[in-house]
Amino acid sequence: MPSEPNSRSAAPAADASLLERRMTAWVGKSLKIQGHVVSEEDLTIDGDVEGTIVVGDHTLTVGSGATVKADLTARTITVSGTVIGKVRAHELLVLGETGSVIGAIVAARLRMADGAVVEGPVEAAGGRSATASTDASR
Image 1 (cartoon, rainbow, N blue to C red):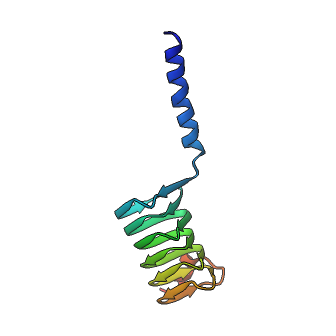
Image 2: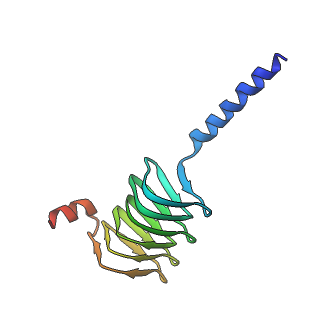
Image 3: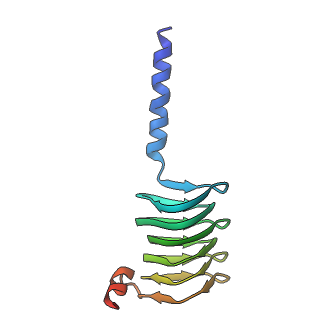
């Protein structure tokens, strides 16, 4: 029986190292979230989210099958799915060929693929911080 405690202590250590290696939070396809989402790490959404999403100085990715009815704020945002709401990217907004944004866009830089759809006003600051640009216009 002395080997049992060793095998049990090894399993949690292995689980801890797997968690430490994870670099991105993830909302899976079968998950639906309503409310205010705040992440202190990169976030990928493949499911449905309604509310607000704040990722701060990190990257937010909206996957091709995702539907997000929320206001988004992040350093870099990549949209391959559907976003309905205000999008604020402090550095870069990337719209993939299957991506669509229905709502206002404020971004320092905007990269848009053929096939992407935008319905709403776009303010691209040409490389300046989107936050600084918006603050200066107030």
